[in-house]
Length: 93
Image 1 (cartoon, rainbow, N blue to C red):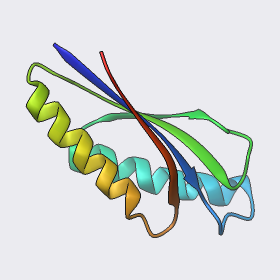
Image 2 (image 1 turned 45 degrees about the vertical axis):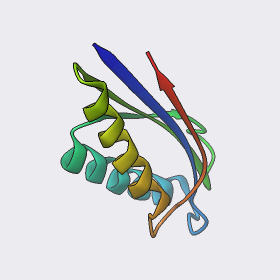
Image 3 (image 1 turned 60 degrees about the vertical axis):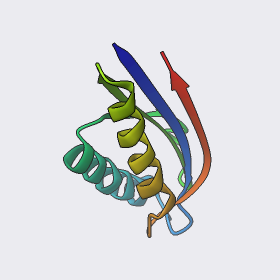
Image 4 (image 1 turned 135 degrees about the vertical axis):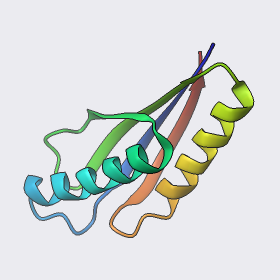
């Protein structure tokens, strides 16, 4: 069993309130869940309007598959319109 955990930081430059931030994060989380079937949660900066920290995880019996999914997730996050990925950290367990 392989567990891949991707921690990313996002900048949300157009957020003027926590409500704006939540709208953007909901959109991002829904895209990732629907397209790649990963687990995702906000893991930091909950009260900061313009930044977010997300944890994204996949569990698989095949490390090649997990690596491919995490790579595609990372690419999607790097190309978001409504947010900018500022930091990315990958852990394997």
